Amino acid sequence: MKAIVTIMLKNGVLDPQGKAIGHALNNLGFDQVGEVRMGKVIELELTETDAANAKEAAEEMARKLLANTVIESFKVEIVG
Image 1 (cartoon, one colour):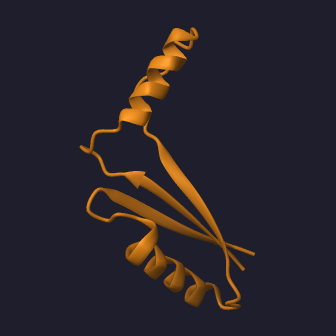
Image 2 (cartoon, rainbow, N blue to C red; image 1 turned 120 degrees about the vertical axis):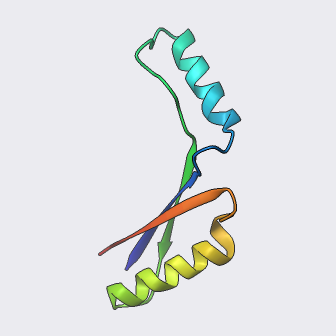
Image 3 (cartoon, rainbow, N blue to C red; image 1 turned 45 degrees about the vertical axis):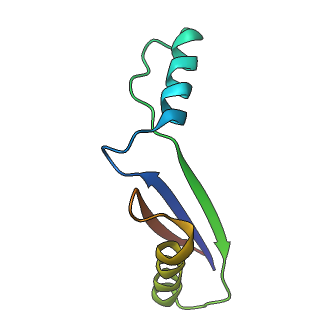
């Protein structure tokens, strides 16, 4: 079973990478791009066979290690 953990900076937290990407896209002529927020996606292959248990485990992993919950939020999706 695979868990996909998406981690994003919380609203109000400065995102210099997102600003740089947005600026570069505008310089390339993509004027329709407004604010850009940079995040990360982590795929975990889990041996768990129960989707609820897999989600619970991945959420615990995100809280304890994968995300800095002071400045980042996360969501977990189970596939397979």
